[in-house]
Every structure is written in structure tokens, then in C-alpha cells.
Length: 191
Image 1 (tube, rainbow, N blue to C red):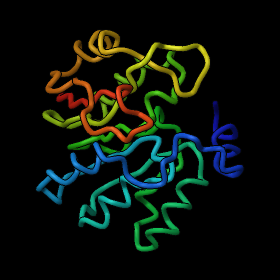
Image 2 (tube, one colour):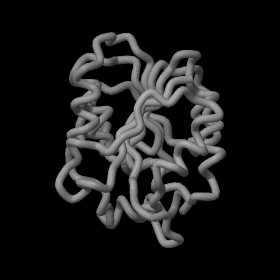
Image 3 (tube, rainbow, N blue to C red):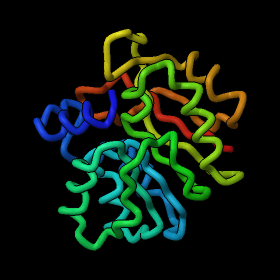
Image 4 (cartoon, rainbow, N blue to C red):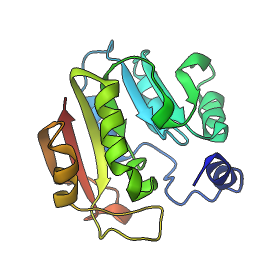
């Protein structure tokens, strides 16, 4: 699951996870954000419906990172005025671009090989400012060896994140889109 793997997925339109719009839980979460100056990161941004929505609402200090250039170009086509320097084609684990107030999680964690989960937690911790939040959605179904997506459970997530983060919310998502209903947890963890 390297750069070539993900680029081939986008170029062949083999993106079953892509619903074609911002998911309801993230839209409602973003809608309650008031500070347009927040520095926001979306890792594994994919086609970037969340970053597009943020941009349209006036959040101009937001960054997208993806290992493949293809989805970042899709974001640029839909948001031609989005700054190139805020669309990062890079390995998430290699970025070091300052500290963020908020990092949004949407299908990135579940796309990573489970062996990278501890490294994910460490990198999120490094990238957030003190008091910064990691928020979004995690899948809640049995961890599989075949993926992506790879599953996980509330118990696993607590064991991974509690040593580094204050668990503000980790609960069954009440407003998932129908195909994901009952299989998502909404979370907000604070550094």
C-alpha cells in the first residue's frame, strides 16, 4: 500500500470508500467550528471533500496531505484557488509542517496497515499543538487482516490513544451515512 498502490486506485476509479461528498458526521462537526483561523490538517485526504467544504466556509489555514498526487489534483480542479503549498504530496509519517489546532480523521486510519497504528498515534501527537484536537471517524468492526479498510474496536482505540490524549468523545456515531450506520465511532481526542 504505497504511493503506486494508491495512485492506481485513483486512476482506475477503484475508490469504493469515496462517497462523493463530505460525510454527514464531519460536515456537522465542521459546522460547529467558529474560529476560521484554526490551523487544520486532513491526512490521507483522498478526493478531499472535507477540505473543499472547509475552504468554501472560509477556513484558509487548512492543509491536505496524501501519498498520491492524483487525489490532490482532484481537489485542485474543484478548488482552483486553493494554495498549492497547502496540498502536500507526501508520506504522512514524514511530514513536519508545524503544529495544528485540529486534525480531521476520515478513512485514513482504517486504510493504514494495523502495524502502523502506534506510529500514527505518535505522529498525530507530534503534529498537534498543546490543547489541539484529533477528531473524526473510526470504523467499529472486527479488525481484519484483509484490507483496507481494516477495522478496529473502541477498546483498541482507547488502549492506543489514552496514553497520549485526553479522550473527550468516543461514541457510536448517530448520523453515519446509511452504508456505514452502526460501523462508525465519532471521536475527539485532545493533546
